[in-house]
Amino acid sequence: MINNPPQQQSTTTDAISSIPENRPSKIVILSASSGSGHTRAGEALEAAAANMPGIASVRHIDVLEYAAPLFGALYSDLYKQLVSKTPSLWGWWYDKSDTPWKGENFRVAMESFQMKPLIECLQAEDPDITICTHFLASDIVSHMLQKEQLVTRHAVVVTDLHVHALWLCHQFERYFVPTDESAYYLRQIGIPDDRIAVTGIPIHPMFSQPMDREALRKKYEIDLSLPVVLLSAGTFGMESSIEAVRALMHMQQPAQIVALCGRNEDLLKEVVLMAEEMPAHLKFRALPYTPDMHEWMAISDLFIGKPGGLTFSEAMASALPMILLNPIPGQEEINASSMLEQGVAVSPTDVVTLPYKADLLLGDPQHLAGMRDRLKQLARPRAAYTILDTLLGIQSEIT
Image (cartoon, rainbow, N blue to C red; front, side):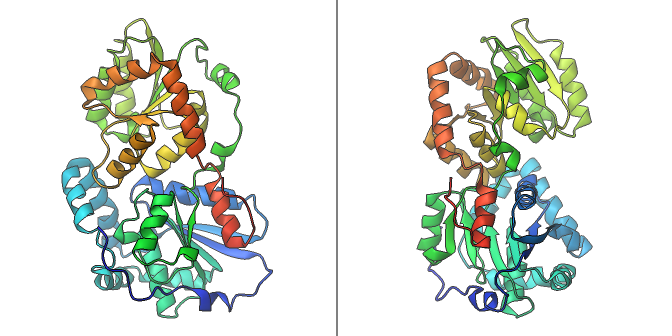
């Protein structure tokens, strides 16, 4: 929903003038462990910063560790409970609260009261540049700039395709957004065009490195003659993951199915047992959490998962077509709609039709190749570097 734009957007221009030029920058990255995407975006920026000149130090902070205990626990747990137990309620709240600048003063006042330890931490850190991958963090930094409690260059990195009202703040230097449509939206609600950069969502630098698909398949003992279907089982929850695995047993196309179970040991045990029931034309493997997601995506032909901002950005960087299953109402449904519109993903009407969609794609190599080509066009695997380049004043092409 678009509301009347604010009368004037304040930026951190005045604050920037007091920071000496031509010196290495001290960077603080602020994320929040409310959903994994914000944290992974922060980790991606941190990893990219380690390989770049012009940076004196970088620190990545989970802002919920610096919140009043009750507030921090409630903030993280409430979101997780809503999206897992009552997703429709979360979707209702997402839409209801998406009016730019409505209720902003009350929200920021409440947050700043609950986040006093973070305010003290930032004052002690005294960073030249702050990069926020979560709206709670950007609210606090903006508040501190407005109250002249901090002098820093404030960057906001949006990690979903739609810029929800919660992402909006008054004191900032630059918004980094995923798409041209995101940038258009911000301009329409009054954000100055020269304060917006379209960079994509930052993903780990490992996804921008060339990978030998055949060598990786040999490394993981993958049959070179069969397509690989990668299922992100750990993101669906126990019951939904089991339903997805059981549905895939009905696939007709020969394939290798790899189920990533994350850190859910109970799910891993259950899925391993289910593997014994797989028909002969389907090879099946269940894996616990792996730090090598970039390699598994590189060797796969099809990915089944939820359309979180980081996940679909990683899939794009890997030129990996997706089957989108059970998107969360709100941000994930918007992400899913965009991916379907771009022709880089499909979505079953129900988990029961999941094998139908998988067979349809694997049985049409030309269509699958076209989806891969489109993904390569849309991918921005170096988004983390581009964001840092921009903030450090390095001229680089956004790719």
